Length: 466
Image (cartoon, rainbow, N blue to C red; front, side, top):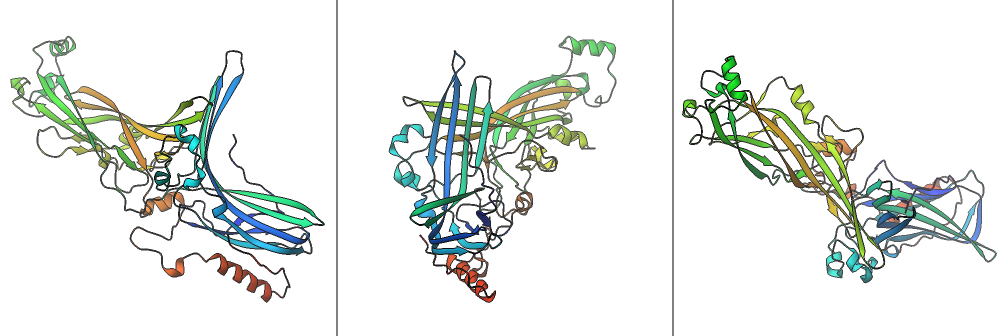
């Protein structure tokens, strides 16, 4: 089940206008189909069409060393409705050095076409395939995930591509030429960058015991007797009971210029703590912090009798240990029952991009937004751990938090810089009429005028739009 690859044929192919590397649902793909070869045909036609599909595959090993393959497939775009005939009529290209081009302009649909999904796939889908529901499903972004094992193989991808077809009829026989060009589709968030990260609060009770908790003795050297008491957990060692409160984001937006919050506060429980502490809070310092985003991709395949599910997992370490080590100043958090928590994410300027932490990207891993389509489900969780030190004693805590990763805001300057894209649209200002891409008819007429000005007879283009 390979992904669709581009055809590399200098004699017949597809070229896109501009330098864009990605498109979004609703965008216009403009370009041309070209033919550079001696051609004579009294009846020829050139079509170009947009395709989109989500495919899954699972290979399961058997005891005898063989394997059985299961597949799943959903077409996302109605191809006949997204096909243009850019040329139809007699075609004459005198020499192999002369190139003939036919401009095209295709608008990418915004939603999945209900007519592309079969009712027999109802039980094979993560999403409802009722017609009214499908009409509201956004086209998913281009995506690819695969995992190879000794006895099994799992794969799922979402792909989009342009396909051009030329049919040349000569003396009753028809010769067909085909060209394929994959295009990358990424969902776009036209809203401003989020400021609400849907924080979830973790509260855990702990205690620390140390002679350094006593006011005025934070920096004193411990005697051998005091060290022995602490080592064996003597009741003579002053103890502070407290609740460690951590607020963790459940939504992460890629390329968001606002730091990702990770809020920490120590709340002493003086009623349970040693009286000698006199309600004097110690300094609480974050000495270690680790965050790893785990991505899970689950695919559905039909076995003919039942639906099989399989998942693959990948990890991306945000490398916060490096961020803390690079700081010259320690990170202290409040140790009080009142007031706001300390935001470690803001202190570290924690922002996440497609390749991990902005400023320290991963060279090998990338993040895709969370999504669910008919036979592919891609979700994430945040595995975090932290060490807080008080009076020389470490308190460790960790948790696994399900998260949703959303696409970068199209309003974010950093999102555009990171992806290399400059979109015409923003969430605040709609594109001016002058900025709109030319229609297919305008492109075609410009090409005809250009050819006439060059003095060539050319080929009379009689394209129709379907």
